[in-house]
Every structure is written in C-alpha cells, then in structure tokens.
Image (cartoon, rainbow, N blue to C red; front, top):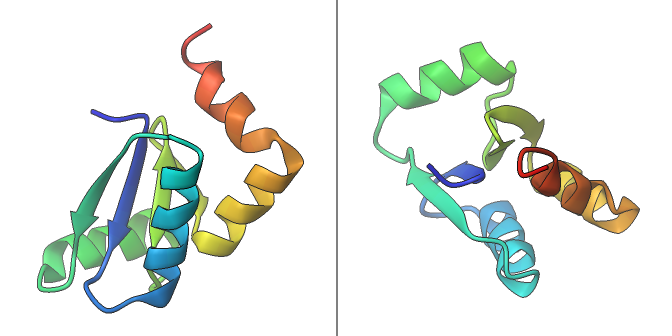
Length: 87
C-alpha cells in the first residue's frame, strides 16, 4: 500500500488540486474512486467524520482534504509525515 491514499470522485475540483500537489512534489499515491461505491463512502464518513472528498490518508492516518494537504505542504509537515514511517 502507498504511504498516501486519496479517496476521490470523478468530478471533484478539490481532488484534482490535491492530485496536482502530490504529483508536483513527486509523492506517489494510491487513488481510490468512490464515485459509485456507497459502502466506501459510508466507511469514509464513519472513519473521518466528513462527507466531502478528497479524503487523504498518510500512513493510514486521515489528514483531511485538499486544503489540509496544502497547509501541511506549506508548513513542511507533509514531508515530515511522509518520512516518519521510514525512519
């Protein structure tokens, strides 16, 4: 499993924005499309407490959506989280 997993839908500008950031940074990620998967969407709501996408997990920890990902990136915390499991 990839260190970063992003749950997304097919028509989601925030998903596109989050993917662009990860790609710019060269961060590999697994994308799981939940557009037509009611069970996975229900699991996301139960796990994260949010109904929106994207929902991004780093090493299994939910970090939020696109806005939160960008905040982590700007603060340098994104790289620290990615490195945390490899040290």
